[in-house]
Length: 217
Image (tube, rainbow, N blue to C red; front, side, top):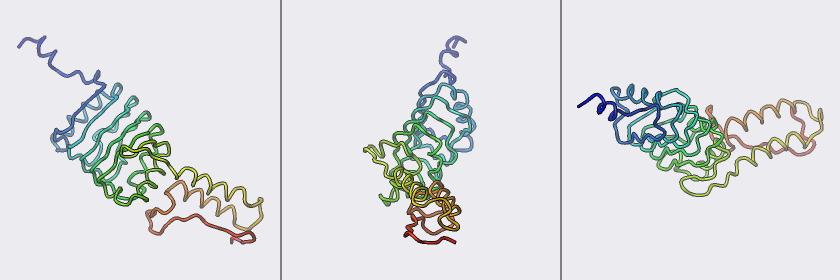
């Protein structure tokens, strides 16, 4: 074959906007470096990246993907989304049939995607209990519009606002000793895990209900 034919046949990764690398066994130690190189070369132009059925347990590259809109990681072995890439424009994510547990730490990374509108996460331990599943997802992805192919109404956002407003507006400044400390605690709790979810240290977070005249010490 001529040099021209070799050049024409070789993929030009730095111009590849749409990559489908599914079913390639890329999770093996021998394939991971090559996959990392491909993603790094295509990082600035990638719009769609499909890596389903590759036995991946973490995302293979730490490079930023500024134009990525779609990421398919279905049928892999992710137990957390923490290694997912920086991709501020990401809109659609599939993590169907992985190993994601029903913990805030497993999905917290979704907060890094302000434009995420569609998520598919069925067939994970995370999705076994529908109510906690929707609550965790709604907390991590407040702008989500579609969950597993169905319209998603996020009830978590108004809960967070109500929780903060209750403590800010129900009492005048200095009305009760220790109130400022409780306000700080509630803000921290409401931003670190959804109500009803199990925090890392155990226990369950619930909104505090105070009657007028209660003194916090």
